[in-house]
Every structure is written in structure tokens, then in C-alpha cells.
Length: 100
Image 1 (cartoon, helix red, strand yellow):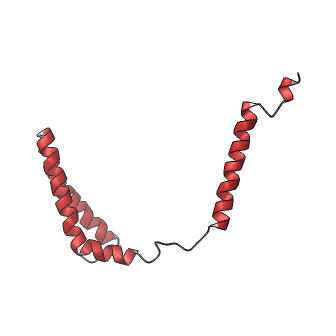
Image 2 (image 1 turned 90 degrees about the vertical axis):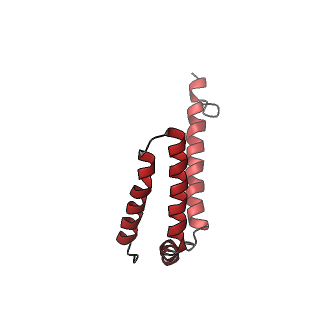
Image 3 (image 1 turned 90 degrees about the horizontal axis):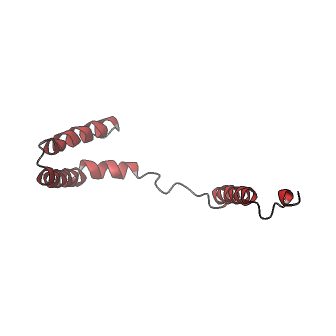
């Protein structure tokens, strides 16, 4: 009967205490280390990059990956991925408000 109330060595008590401690650390970290958003204001720079040379590098990387996948599998659908990704990327850039 005494072992039932021995909470020091109970695996459930240890699990519960670890969860409580982790929750405490999470809330403490949110409170103490809260800072300004470091990515605030970078959306314009990202859109400008992707509309400039970034789009070219993205297309080149997609082309290289598609050609490597085609060589590995001999499946022509991987080469059509270039067109699919290009169209999808342009649609997403238009939806996000970037000028084509």
C-alpha cells in the first residue's frame, strides 16, 4: 500500500513533472525572450529577388533536377515538371501581389 503512494519513483509522476517543467520553460521563454519579428519587412525584398534573378535561378535549378530525375527514371513526366513548376510559381507570385 505504501508503494502506491510513493510519488517520487512513479513513472507517471516523473512523466507529469517533466511535462509541467517543459510547459513552464516554454511559457517562460515566450515571456522572457519575446522580441520583434526579425522577418518583418522582408517580404518586399523576397518578392523583388524572386522577380529578378531569383526566378532565373529557380528555373535553372528546376531544370537540372528534372533532367537528373529523367536520367534516373527514364520517365518523361519528370521533364513536364519544369512547365508545371514554372506555371505554379508564376501563379503564386501573381496571387501574392508581385508584378510579373
